[in-house]
Image (cartoon, rainbow, N blue to C red; front, side, top):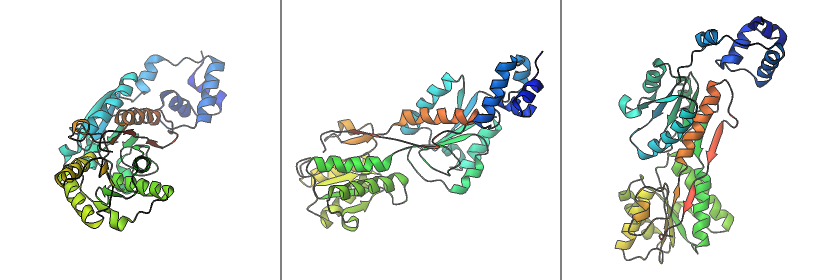
Length: 329
């Protein structure tokens, strides 16, 4: 009878390495895995199912941390992750940052104590997490809508590319004096959408002075209205405005209409995120639909690769958003 020791000798590795190659419990190079599996095939080794069950420590449960699990973006990411988990005969265990006063360390520790096989940490709106937080994730993990460190796989929307497409779209509609209502200055989505927009205008040869034509809101409709007032005062010749989310776009549209401006005749408006109201606003909003379900699917796929001891390639995945053209532009 062929034993695991026979396989180890034939492959030129230790018995524990063969065990890890079979269980996926520890990271092992692909070359070593290939040697082990070649030896198994040559020798006709058949692991004892009962023994394998005793060695396996996987629980079939994936931890899912969401900053706010009731937020619609988070639920759509979860939907995508659940699809992949079901295919792997696994289940999701949820926890929310709200439950732990936004203390991610406590939330991750809660999941770890439930013996989850790995963790997906997702944010509904992109934001940065301190790099030192990577030490909290001492088990397989993937982050969504945020980036912590190169050592942790991440899935994010390509906001820079979205910002560029917004600019190209407005220019194609005749805009030559655009402005931007950006989000909070330290938010990743705001920074990258603005950077992409500015880059595209430069490619198009359109002059753009951020000090005059960019104002920062706080992602609320009220701030969109206030920011539009500020822009009309500082650059009354503007013929288009790119808003970093749909709430600010909605506020800007309402204020423009109240001031007697025609949309899109006098002012073209583009938002972002494709919020539920965007399609039936008084002036339906041109916007970008985020690939939320796909982000959930990809993050779960990457996590199972980590659990199985493989390194996802690439470690950082950027997914494109989809431009939805409506009346506002």
